[in-house]
Amino acid sequence: MKRYITIVACCILALAGLAQAQNTGTTTLSVVVGPEAALTVTTGTTSLATTSTTFGNPFTGTTNLTYFIRTTKATGTGALTLKITSDFAGTGGPSVTTPPSTGDALTYTCTVSSPGTACTGSQTASTASSTGFGTWGAAANSTKAGNSASVAWSLSDDPVYATGTYTATATFTISAA
Amino acid sequence: MLPANGSTGTGSQSLTATINPVGSVTAPASASLTTAATTFQPFTGNVTVSYRARTTPAGGGSVTLSVSSDFTPAGGPSAASGALTYTCSGATLGTACSGSQTASTTVQTPVLTLPASACTGGGGACSSQNPDSVGLSFTLTNNPGYATGAYSAKVTFTISST
Image 1: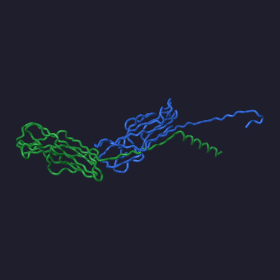
Image 2: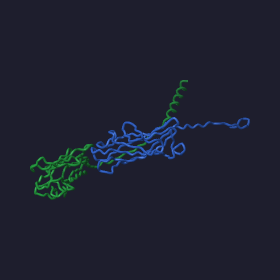
Image 3: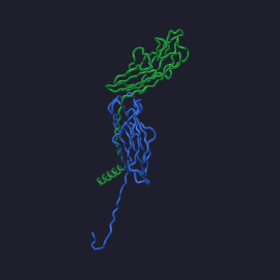
Image 4: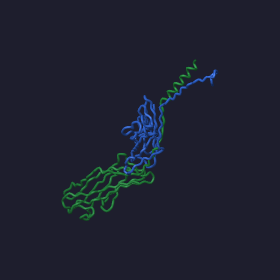
């Protein structure tokens, strides 16, 4: 009698096991992560101003950027450059392409947060070619939110400039390999 | 065997079939997540999962997924950190998951829900397709902090029927 009861219990358990079916399938997701770079100019318009009314100081201003970068692990590089893609408009004012007086120039200094390296010293902006701003080595990674960089501008205050408002456009280019 | 007096007789036997809930699921062996841009747009990829199901009048079922093996090697994306999400669409039987789901390495997340009395194929009360299918669109964040390289992860789909 004891044995009979045991058998019945086993059958009930077996039937209960059939009440639910389960099955699985698997997919492998693959991704190749390559070098990439992007930037955002957070200062949409930079005003250049001088505190002097006696030509003692240049017009200055700062443009802030946020950069995103990922360079290749072993051999990668990155570069950030700028170019004046639209010179100061208007007659008689400052000009990057053809400064009215010798020594007039739009110059800048750079700040690039780690892991980037900023340009050294004062650079002269150009409408003809891109000029250096920052560089990165291999295996350089910014944060997800981006890292900071900035350029401090300096424009000569030449007495020959006609009074008025003048606007130029600087274009920043970042690349990664 | 004939009876001893030579007359004929009849016999009967009951045939009983027990139809139990069943589920099976198949997925492509591999899928690539890619990005068209080089400005940290997310990596995306699509997977179509096929399934067959039968549920009881009082039952139901589901298809779920889990990341059974996170992205390797180290230094790249991680599903454990919530980098892999997906949406579901076009279920031919049942109801696909709604909205964006975050894939997990620790819990099963929904792909679709099967109703009671569901069955694959044949039309009528069952679906018209065999197998049924549901589409998944995966999105992987493109974090600048990832080291360059190739990474892979395994996603396991599980179908359950009652």
